[in-house]
Image: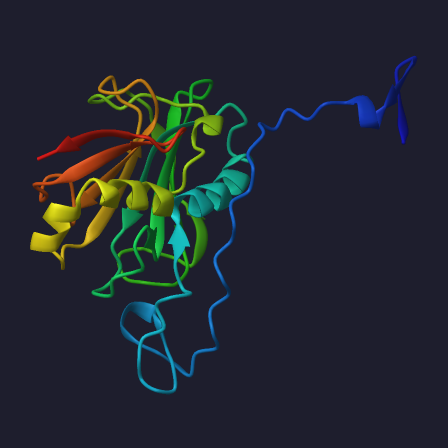
Length: 223
């Protein structure tokens, strides 16, 4: 197809898209049909057991879903932070979560905006699908730095598996610890990293492992 622009004819096939290359991750399996809804909106099957294995998402999948929606907010956005959101008392499969929080920054706007992606409706203002919160003024706080969208190549489940290989002794002694995830770029490491946290948060944990989010390589263990 061609388009007449002024006195020039432009071949559309020759026009390059400005959208960054972002290979789509593998989507989660579709959830089975529920017969009722249990606590915090998690579907319950006919046998009364909570259906948790297919109602979850990896961090990179959630990020990709949010990124598509956030492009309408700002085309120059950069990543600031990705973290999982605990939902109820159910524990999702390793490396996944029922809900994720993603924060982008637009330097041209001088604003930051937090989005959530969830596979269900839940308490705490967690909505199914992609939900954008009100934008806020951006001011760098702490050590978190902005990072390019293309830097995120390793998914949360792969980061968990890499961290687990370095944590056999700890996991053996603490088999029931919940797993949390924090994706940030800080001066501590040269690249964007997944921090795989054994515990509900960084402050409540005594053990975590950093995995490079671009290469999947082990970086460091924090105790």
